[in-house]
Length: 267
Image 1 (cartoon, rainbow, N blue to C red):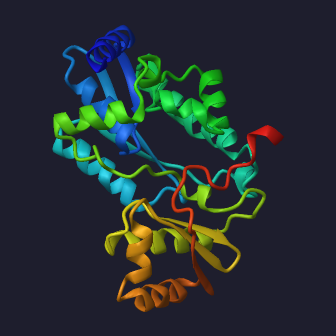
Image 2: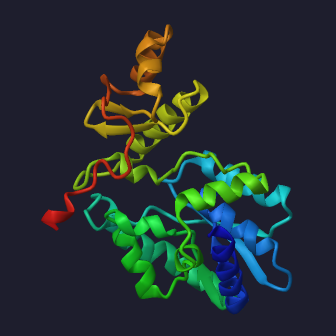
């Protein structure tokens, strides 16, 4: 099944021929970029957007991958889009419009025909207003077009020896803050520092959702018991309080994508 999808993907990439890959350094865009690198004759480059709500760790990982694989890479610094400062429900739509607008400008300036992103077939299932923006802007999503699911991508990435094959799914830091809440740079840095600390302690993929002065930790499967029984739990709590949170809570449902998303039935 995946062999057929790979043939379709290769055909899509050859048909595009000249394109910019919106490169986050995550599982999907890394696989897409790597696949492009295996096809001779393509004109492509990787471009990463750096904003205040993208963790520095992800920028570094994206840069390291490109450097280690001799892939041309550009990092574009953008200010916080004021249109999403209040974290509106449609923030992904507005954000994608602005970020990918810059990517399209880069593509035109550097004579690339298309801009491609790492959206996969599973991404159709969640509340993702950003997809509408990408479609309106003519952004190509080769993985989705070829029918690749997240599991397909992880499986092939593992076979190819890509370091991202088991990397937890990431998302911008705005997803840690409830909708219709003013976003401050202070909150963003607190979230980033708290998640980096949890990452260093072995809680990969943990999310720190912010509700006022409360940090609600969502753990990946298998980590709930570990964090409850962690002999250094008091140290963990103390660290997050030092970062600036007053209350530290553990979500018993664990990590799930889009836990702060609105009920789609009410949209």
